[in-house]
Amino acid sequence: SESSLEIFKDHLRCWTIGHHIAQTAISDLLKIIKSDLKLNLLPSDARTLFKTKNINNKIVNLSPGKYYHFGLKSKLLLKLIQNDFKGNEVNISVNIDGLPLTKSSGSQFWPILIKIDELEKLKPFPIGVYHGETKPNNSNIFLLRFVEEMKILQNEGLCLYDKIVKIRISKILCDAPAKSFVLCIKNFNSYASCPKCYAEGSFQKNRMTFPELNSKLRTNEEFYSQSDEDFHKDTSILCDLEIDFITSVPLDYMHLVLLGIMKRLLGFWLKGNKEVRLFKEDIDAINKRIKLIYKSTPREFSRKPRLITEYDKWKAVELRTFLLHYGPWLMKPFLRNQYFLHFLSLHCAIRILVCQDLLEKYIDYANELLMYFVNEFGNLYGNEFVNHNVHNLIHLTLDVKTFGSLDKFSCFPFENYMHTIKMMIKTSNKPI
View 1 (cartoon, rainbow, N blue to C red):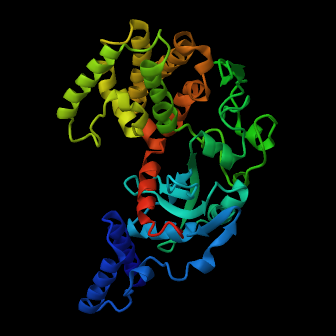
View 2 (view 1 turned 180 degrees about the vertical axis):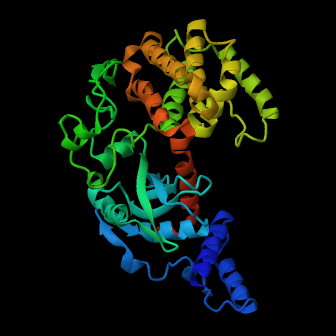
View 3 (view 1 turned 30 degrees about the vertical axis):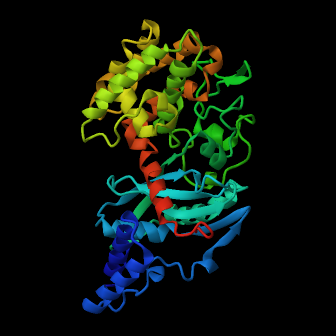
């Protein structure tokens, strides 16, 4: 059938991308399959399989670059059929972020990625992509096609196997700069930038800090009414959709905790002031311990640890492994007691929040640990470093109570798919 052929073609596309197959080899394979298996409807050329021939008339100008819309409805329908989905409701997670394409220029993608919550093992997929030398000038124009389609799906549902399936957005996942961009709110270094509460920032030593721990929480009604004029820059087109912008835009621990706070702690320990900085002989000893770990790293860990002196090159998954697993053992002999206990409070809190089995009993304890961590951060490392990331730790458990363990609403699946997108690009001249 036509749907079976489309599924086969989609599997073939995924296989070629996953194994980095050359286009000439793909074309040769298609000719063999078409000839030997009598699949006359299958294309004979890789360019046709990837639909690259007639794409130009669907690419639109979107200042200062170009945009191509794959389609939300068609993509959802294909993925649901492929995975034999039988449910009555589909919840989708939306991710938007920038992807630099080269180191030598500003060339970048801004894909709109979707993940179906009910199909946990299914990878994210793009429904639109922007390309330019800088990010789109206007987020509302960038999101227009997506919002138009989503409004129809919210109102009418999706026809699947002769029944109507309800479609809703469960969450929007972004790092702080992308969240500011798509929601049209102030950036993370602004006075009123916390997306969860009314904490007022203050400048200390030329840095924006957020020392307040008990500010009033924001509400969805206040977001829509824009009662806090200092928080909003404009009205986001996403307000046309049925979204709770407080509970459905959770904090992402990959950016917040790992790339933000954990990397900052490592920076303090290796390059901070003399009150915090480790001695050179201690750093050498830590590296020796890491080499021991390297030799016996279990296969369950996707990356073997790198030297702590290379921390600025660590990926989020390496920072995660350090924080949740070997970090406390590694650092205990070398950090002063107050600094080690402070680090241990973060370790224990995040260890609880990533484990679904521990949440019911220990989630409030995890919140207490995070409050302690934030409260002591300024005393140990300087009040000027209690920044947007550190402050937002006090709101993390609220999102866990809404969505479950941290990995249920993290950017990790989307970040991994970004690498796949890079591998799809055949020419830097016309990447779309």
